[in-house]
Length: 261
Image (cartoon, rainbow, N blue to C red; front, side, top):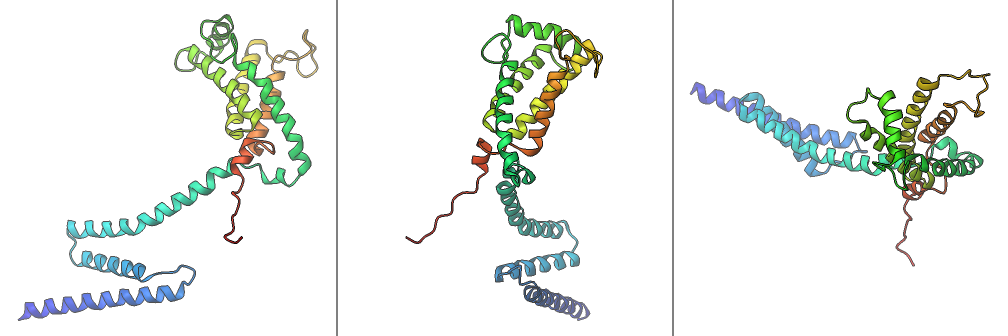
């Protein structure tokens, strides 16, 4: 009789706790109108509460596993919704031009010739020895491997020809991407890295050459050109493509269609 009385008391406590969970769910729905809760949502929270309380009564592996399954089932739809929202909003931000630049129309227009001309001028730097990049076996490509990459970038892992090919692909396709305004920030970052390597090469091979007041035979310091290119690429990696670019077309808001005539 004593054991039956104890079991009856435990069942009563469990039922009272379940009713309390239902009441709290209803109060939650009334106090948070900005987060509409359907009957299904209340029942899911109630079910989770019952599972949690049952697990507290009986801390068996099955009870703990059931509690984890309930939590996972409730969190999964929210995670999927957050992922979809992120995929819809975040990648688009990297294609848009910086808001401060958009607020100045004259700056937007001035960026177009700078971006296009810089990209076009960069294309030939990535195609030594031929029309396309990475022309293995040609004097231009092999000379770059033997006289630039091998002696000055020997600390990089892998064969020097691999890094020479990477250099060519980045400057060739990155120049095209910058000129047409496609993935402008990504192209600009890659081109900036190659220009940083070029500045390092020239400083390591010929030094500052009397900078800033020294005079040299070709009227420009060897590191001068890649340094200026690098600053331009750094600029576009921050502000984006500007107008007249494929990035602007891709990131544009889709047109809204009305149901009316």
